[in-house]
Length: 330
Image (cartoon, rainbow, N blue to C red):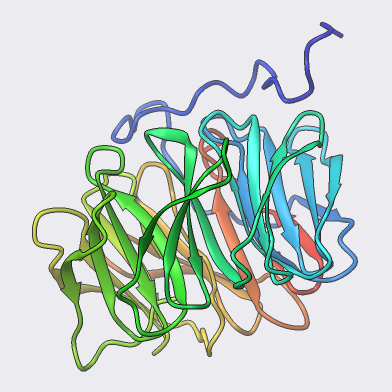
């Protein structure tokens, strides 16, 4: 025992390779479940990995608790109890020392990962649906709310510094694109996708099309050139991630039944595979280039497999979570 903090990564988890470094880091589709993490009393809604190394796994449950698990030892390291209702989204900051959790009790809490202390509590009396740290500054984070606004909080003062108010329905996702977060893409239940400049409260682009469905999840491709959205007509659609944000009509991933759930999309770190959960508890993996379905698993019982994350360092490790309260490692 070196006497260092438990959030310091062990030596076998080196820093994740850059995108395109295929020699060290070729990914493969996983074949079977290798571990189960049980401990949440109700379902698990979101899982996130420690940024860069991925040696810790953060989960937010419908029982109002957040837990941090050690991937190597497969056990709970710490439980964070501070919400009285289900946790909707969790998010690490960029070095993993703190994380945000937003919940249906209308509070957003900023936690210290190592000590478990609450460093701040924020609310605007609306239900927060998504929270994201601003990539250039860990002090600022954006929250998409049920009153159709995106609000930006300053974590040190607790003040609201900016409001973006153009959506017509609750905001579902916030994604930062273009050289580390100069622009942000938001999507909402009103079936629109808006592109904003950071800190300018009018959108610079509307992506809206009569055939579009609302997209409750958007994930950026590791090459940063594309983003994929989970469209509620049971397909995953792909858009450019810069310049014109045009839809890539040829790339569509189908075969799964989302059926109204916000199932996470995850793309492997080398950009070869894309995987998603579905509303019946299955897990699907497609080939990114050929949009061909490669693999499907029966991942979770009793409800959707709602979250999936691809590990940034271990090449073919994938985590899923579902409303049966189990987190599985594949």
